[in-house]
Every structure is written in C-alpha cells, then in structure tokens.
Length: 552
Ligand SMILES: [Ca+2]
Image 1 (cartoon, helix red, strand yellow):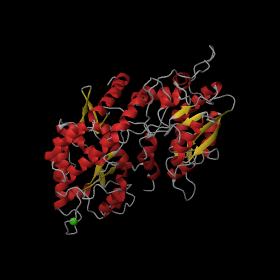
Image 2 (cartoon, protein in one colour):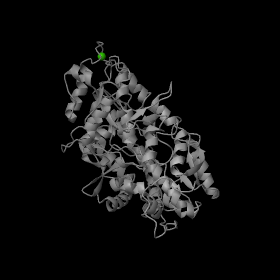
Image 3 (tube, helix red, strand yellow):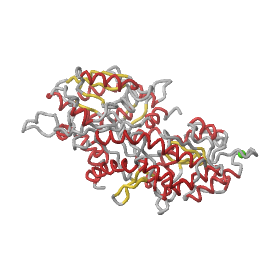
Image 4 (cartoon, helix red, strand yellow):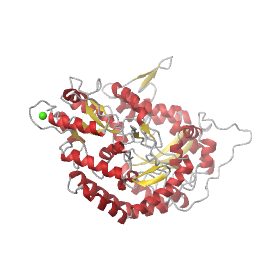
C-alpha cells in the first residue's frame, strides 16, 4: 500500500460533505469595485497583486494524518506566495474538530477570517442569509478566470456549485469521475485454470463463479474456495449495488443525506428503483449467488483486510474493492511470481461491465463535489475581495498551482530540463509521493481538483493502460447531486434515516435468504408506507433544477 495509500485514502474519504441548502434567496452581498474603464480584463496573470496583500484563511489541517498541515514553513506555500504575491495568515484546526470549532466561531460572529473553508458548516445559502459569507457570482465573473475556464468544459460541476437561488457561494473540490472506481476484479490465472474468460453477462458471471467454486482454483485439494469475496453494509453498499447496472439500474453512488441509489431518471422522469421489477430480478440473482455459496458468507462484516486474506490464500477468484487497489490484491495473491508490489503486471484485472438487460455495458460516473468550499466572508474588506477571489481561482485551476499539487516544487521534488521534461527528485530515504505530500502538494485542504495527471503518474503502468481502455464504458449519472434548499434538506432529514435503515435491513435479509423473494411485494408496499414517494418528490424538485441547469 505504500505508493497509493495517501491518494486513495483521500479518494475514499469522499463523504457526505454535500451542501445542504437554504430557503431564503438573498441578493448577493458582494459589492465589488468595478475595474476602471481603461483596465484590461483579468486573464489570470501573475502576480495576483502588484502590492503584497495579506489574507486570513481558516481551514482544517487535511483529511488524513499523512496530509501536511498548511503553513508558511512549507515549500509549496512559500512558492505560492512568491508567485501570487499573496501572503496567507493560516488559521488551521484539526480535521476532526473543524466543525465544532468553526461553528462556535461563526456563532460568535466576530473574528471571521477573509476566506473560510465551508466544510461541515452547512447550507451555503443559509450561511449567506446569516451574514457569514457573500455570493461570489460577480467576483467570479471578473476575477475567476481559471474557474470560468473550468466551467466551460465541466457543466455538471458548475451546476453542482450553483445554489438553488442561482448564486455561487464557493468552488469546491472535484473528484476524478471515471477512473477505475468501484468494480469487481477477477484473477486472470484463476480464469485460465477454469478455462473461462472475462464475463460479459449475468449468466457468464454466475458460471465463472461456479467454476471457481468447483474447480479448486488454489489447488489445495480442498473445497475452500470463496469465488467472489465482497462486502455489503449500509456504509458500504456500492460493491453489491454497482452490479445492478447489469439490470439497467443505476445504484453505484449515493448515501448519507443524499441516497441517490434510490432513484434514477428515465425519459425525463424519476423512478423509485427499489420498487421496480428490475430490482426484484437483481435481488433474486444476488440471493442465488449467496445461496449457492458463490459469495463469502461474511459479506456483511468483511473489510479490506478480510478480502486480502481470502486473496492471499488463493480462495477468491474475484474480489470487490476500489479497483485502483488491483495491484495490491495481485501483490497479495499466491499467483504473484515475485512482483510483490503488483506493479509490473496484472493478476487481478478490473472487470468490464456486464451487459445490461437492454444490451448496454456501463459504469456510472462518480460526479460529485467533495468539500473544502472556499467562502469569502462578509468580514473580508471590499477592496480585498478581488484578490481573495483571484487567489481562490488561481489555486483551484491555475497552472503553477496545479503543478505544485502534482509535482511539488521545482528543485526539491522535481527537476525540469531545457526541453521542459520533468524528472522526479526525492531526498534520500523518502518515497516520492509522500515527499510531495509532506511539502504541501497532493490534495491540500482548500478547493482543488483531483488531477488525472497525478493519478496517472502514481499508478502502475499496466493499470493506467487498462484504465484508458475502460473510458468508453463510463456514462453520466441520470441524477446529479446539485445543492438542496434548506427546506428540502430538512424534509429529507425527517424521512431518510428511517427509510435507509429499513432498506438495508430488508435487502440484507433478502440476500442472506432470511426473507424469501416472494415477500418482495411486501417490501415495495412498506417503502410506500415509510414515505419513499415523499422523498422522491423532493428529488423531483431538485431534478427540475438539474434539467434547467444542464438541459437533461
Ligand atoms: Ca481449494
């Protein structure tokens, strides 16, 4: 886990930081000074200010302990100050206490910084209505050069960053939405031993698992195979739900306050997926896999370590996890021939999607925001707002700032020759990506993008090559997680926890065979009793805004 650990941990930390929203539309409080009539429009040129400007920025110290706490002692931040001419006074709070500390500080209403990380601080519209932050629309128009460039090719992200009242209160972290996310991985040597190839249909998938079960793939003479080692729980539903793609459903993403997997949009209308015949067919299939001994008996309690254990004993022919981990499962497998890091060649190969009932093969893109919203507070002096906006803009999508995320600082973590070729540089005894993280690169606690270039440079070549060939399978989600109004968010809070608990208890019992599939209609009726239609109405309201913003 050396190479990828930091990056993947952060990917997995992507959580329910989705903004909940406010009900009282308010006029933007921003009153920015218009540039003089003679001034050329801002085009992202450095430095961001002719005179040194000091801004106070309150943020957390990073999502994982391996992340570097922002500080002017770190080379990346020293470099960014040099090129932008903006000095930051850091006010940092540990990630786990950020919500509590900052909520208290906001409630006191005094001593706000100029720029505020809005993670965990609630609905943006409400924060603006409460006089904490300003709308950034006008500022972005004038000083958000790189944000506007990003929006040109990322309409979905623009829609998600726009509040229900039409204002943009902040830009937020973006994630890589279509690169080896959640999908099963299949041991190619086990496939060779049983004489079968990569499955492309539900029937082939089932047959492959049966062959793994019956043909002693680890060659120890015992029937100890665990054909498909996976997980299923309320916190980790995706490994199983993702397979519902084979039934034309769309259940890979969502959870917490935004259980997207409950619904899909079809022909412009939302449908409650769990109440469809397709879901019954899917559930019937998974229950059969379980009853046939094709799935690990402990799927409701298994974790990553347990999956590695099954793999290391050669018991698992197929395993579920983030498929960026494919090389780690390969490294742990007895089929590994001395390539202990799994970096040189594939053993566990991410599975191509199964053909759906209607004949298409797809994975759903993980389109979502991931916190670190960059609010400009009402306490930020009007004359400082343009440079605050430029700084946020530049760090989000400016070329030198992106270089620091990917490569760190020239001379320290990389060198560049006259032709512009970059070579990694690492101090004695350090691992390169850990060093880049340590000096302030990688995924800092401010709005940033997960970068494909970083992902690529940190991925074993065989996995990177495979990822390129899988791009054709990714499709946009039919429902995009744009922001809720406060009213919608409150209504969801009243219904969703009880409904979700019921869904997971029931689905688990169906899979484990504790409830027969003949009871499916009772399940469907009970979902109605527990208000799934009311929840769907709220999703429909949001979907109407999505249709307006994205035309679909
Ligand atoms: Ca065996």
